[in-house]
Amino acid sequence: MIIYYILFFLGLFIIIYNYVGYGILLWCSVKIKRLFSRAPREDASHEPTVSLVVAAYNEAGILHAKIRNTLELDYPADKLQVIFITDGSTDESPAILSSCPRILGMHLPERNGKTAALNRAITAATGDVLIFCDANTFLNRVAVREIVKHYADPATGGVAGEKRVITAGEVNNAAATEGIYWKYESLLKKWDAELYSVVGAAGELFSVRKELYETVPANVVLDDFVISLRVNLKGYRVAYAPGAYAMETPSDNITEEHKRKVRICAGAFQAMGMLGGLWKFWKFPLLTFQYVSHRVLRWTITPLSLIVLLVSNIVIVWQDDHWFYRLVLLAQGAFYLLATVGYFLAQRKVKSTLFYIPYYFLFMNIAVFQGFARFMKKSQPASWERSKRQETDLVMNEAISTKN
Image 1 (tube, rainbow, N blue to C red):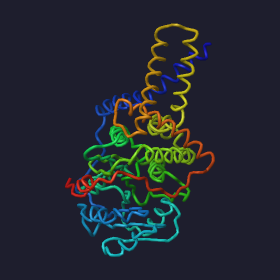
Image 2: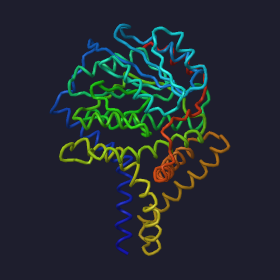
Image 3: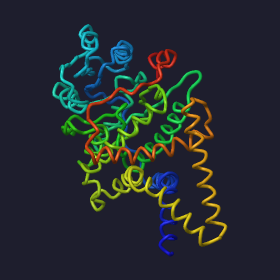
Image 4: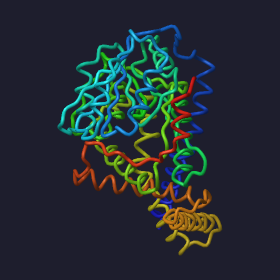
């Protein structure tokens, strides 16, 4: 019987630590660090040469707006090389880019995946700094400046921008919850960077020194995650630039968001297998702590802990009528009930944050199991799929016209 108590408290601890405790511990650690050390060096006048690389697969519908947004970036034109790579695209994307002399358009008819496209684009990059962003995201005008100022610090090998999920008017539950999730993630990234380093950048907007870029195998799913953490393995930190942000509309519905989450989880297991050096805590003590706490637990033990906690709690209550165990079981039952109702409301596109947040949390953890199954079956292709996102003219116009 004792084993069930051990599993109960272990599962409870892991879940609370992963989603709440790590953030609190991180915040406290940052507060303590501020008492003894200065912030990393930044220099707003620092202007290295930059290559901005955009991978675009069948994005003709949004490409004109993306080009205009890119050419309006506040950075010297003679120091900013813009590369769009459209490998595998079967729409008008290559033709649209050929009419823009400021942009280097690269295209092959073969579709070999985003990672292969990025590797090929880098061969034509001339900048000392590489900035990557997605074709369906829009950057604020000073994004490049906000990123490159961090490279004044020689210890900085990469910079992660901020992802903002923006909406206009009535939004569905997928939109609202995705936005909440990314606000929390952005806060953790800010504290991660202040303690030591961002742990895995998001592909919507991130940057590395060109000299540190390491060619990634073409079958890699999460190129952004692997590229940025390989910078860490070379002994450099990845800074966080909240003043540089990529704006995009949320997933059109929960089905599209689910498809994206499963792909990310499948790629996460692949990436963890490739980044074994991050477990060398004697070499990277802070980085390993952040990597395990922020990433590994979320993709491995925490989803299992949800099952362990529920099963062990049921067994304990069957034998022990202590109020604490009954209260925890009641809380779990209420949570899963809310999540179930949230699922049915989501299917009917009924907006209810109270029910939808538990459902979103649960479906993210279910996606981990599905992603693991894909990883084991090697059925997750590296070629990227366009997730259907909300198309709101007001949102796009706001993004394109952003002046700061």
